[in-house]
Length: 413
Image (tube, rainbow, N blue to C red; front, side):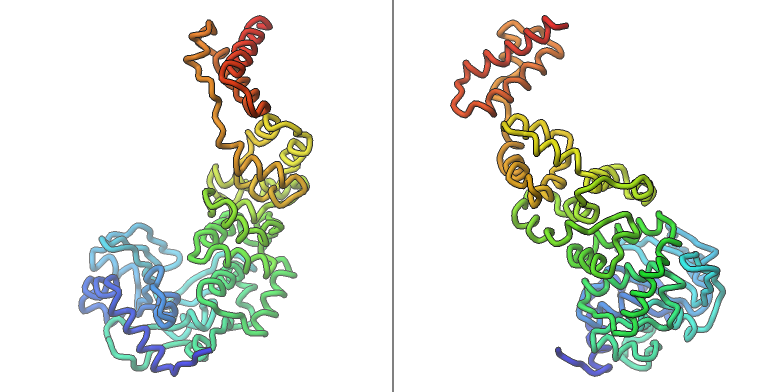
């Protein structure tokens, strides 16, 4: 592992900051108020690692809300309770926060906040490598306030909590630990790992609202290294907190290779909840309350209880029956089913059958005397089934099967 001195890490951060047009634009927007402001947290960490910062976080030595108001910044969100604001600029968004202390009524509760000196603000943060600052009013790698061991831990690529109650106060830090490990190549040091395991075993995440868990999960799914971040969350036992099982996680790399045409973010979502048995009512309710949006929630439900899908594929013997068994299920669920006992049928549908179209059109059926309306759909579907199950069928054979099915349906009506 390459080791760098603290001055070298700061120089690297400064170089990355100088190359980032957002930092220059932010300093210009702050003007002479830049002396009150420091870049803080993940953006400093990432720049010191030579990574482009995902977002810019500004720590204000004073009242952040007063500062953004006095400068006329466009605030998208204001949180008086937390002394924070999110402002929108032409070049992106910036989070401004007052230096503050936090207290927690119980594990998983939102914090109570009050102004505090910079040193206390740094100590309330999640990990030492996120308690680093870069003064915006200076471009010299001088005395940058930071938590003890912050720069040394960054050099050693270690994640270390700042106090023993870190995961108790805010259990969502467990999810952040998983993301930082994946994105930045950081490893929890032994004591932090022990505290994390104790928090998981103590089920502290159960005290966090489903909506907050859903937010952390979406950030993990959308991380720059999502497959690694999800795998890290599974490794640390976090998936059960969102109703997941993680049984599909080992297949993620294989899914990307085998089914490259699928939306891999949706495959990752399905993998989180994939399991072979039915989901409990409580788990189904939790999935619904995560706030993932209608599409991802439906995908999570399917993946968490694919028994109907697997049973349908088990009973399917003809290609048309395989297509029927798959018709109401997401392709991402079928991708995970391709690793199960019915994998050959799921793979056949994913690789071939889902792309097959009926060679008989509705226009041809109407030309053969089928009246416009629902019977045309019946005929097109029947024609596809016949075509799928009869490899050497002629166009005339398929049309005959389609028209016969439509007429029989009309007669039955």
